[in-house]
Image 1 (cartoon, rainbow, N blue to C red):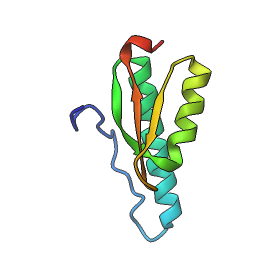
Image 2: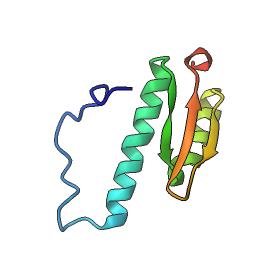
Image 3: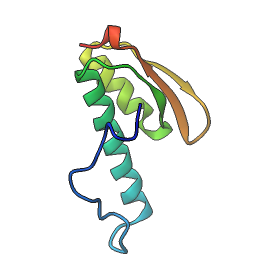
Image 4: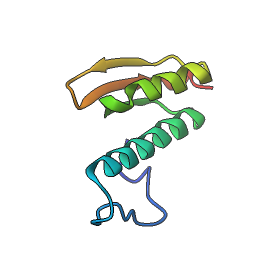
Amino acid sequence: MSDEEYTPIMPFWVDTEGYTDRDREMFTCGVEFQQVYETIQDKRDWSQCVHTENASRIRMMCGKLGVPVKMVRICSTWTHCEIPSSTTI
């Protein structure tokens, strides 16, 4: 997956003093969740790490969409997520 596949339309202003570290983490998880969802909708493979905190959300989304997903926890921060395009909706 190239860095150019997901390009923000507008800059993210979450690195200002008005946001906590937790706000930034949740923003990042939301963007990551949307990227996985768009990949499923576009019938493309997803095989990369996601934030471990997001793994259960992504697993539940895949269950709701009827898409099998394989998760392997790498460490407390990262979990490898694999969704083959041949199984997407």
